[in-house]
Image 1 (cartoon, rainbow, N blue to C red):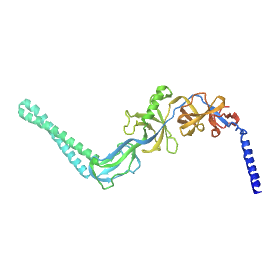
Image 2: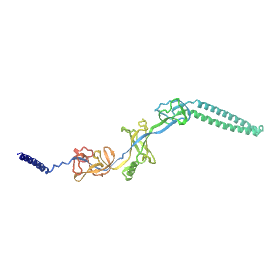
Image 3: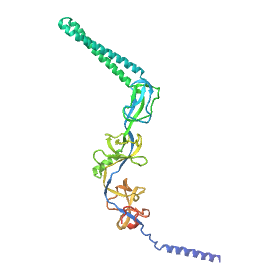
Image 4: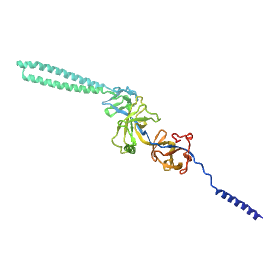
Length: 382
């Protein structure tokens, strides 16, 4: 009896398995094509975006040094303040230099008196020579005395001028208008001539921004120019700077310098732009984003950013072919323009690219193009 019960149960199990297998022979229901929105590519001229990292630098930078040895007795400027050209920055003890100047000035005055006397003597002797009252030797001696007095006066004036310059150099003044830095030596310190830097001056209005495109970027730009796909303005190009928080500098600058050679260490070419900076918003050493303006990218292919996907082989998009079938297409992107990617290669004009609904798309299968009312993508096809 147990044998027949087990057999019966086993038969039930076999029947169940056969029934399931029979159901599997029926065709599975097909999933409907996913709804997508598309954009049809169209070549267009757009502003060329050339962006680089730059760094601010003073348009003028000098190290303030003294020409003399001496002790600092005054420092009237405030560290970090703006100073005008000619403003007094440091004063050295003038005692020795003032005494030397007074002494040399007195010697020059004495030489002037000697010259005046020699001129009077010669003027008096010349008429007497014609009358025979004096000899030719007397006149020659007077002439020699006059010449020596003239030389003595010239030497005396030179000594006085040099002493006057040394005295004036005890006043260390700003050679440019700019911002004065921290004092390197305190009051009472001894300065050993030009060897000691007292402070520095930086002019930051106008201010420079240096930036360095790589040789690869330069080659890409030149090739695009040669191919006619990139048009750059002639003359000094306009440059825009954006600070670290994204805000632009109020004034635009001009590209005014390009190094003739590339830096062999970095493979870059140094460029420079000059900007007005009256409010000192941009400071030396500050990093910024530099954008070169005025260029035009010809016949560019632009697609919305959300249409470009990333795979193991890089960027790709879904393109519709015959029968509204989706095909994956590898593309090379370059820059952003607004909310779109500029496609460097992989797409041509007139192609239909899927924008929304890509997460449900399977390559090689058809899709349904959503009507315009269902489209959420800018530029989607009706």
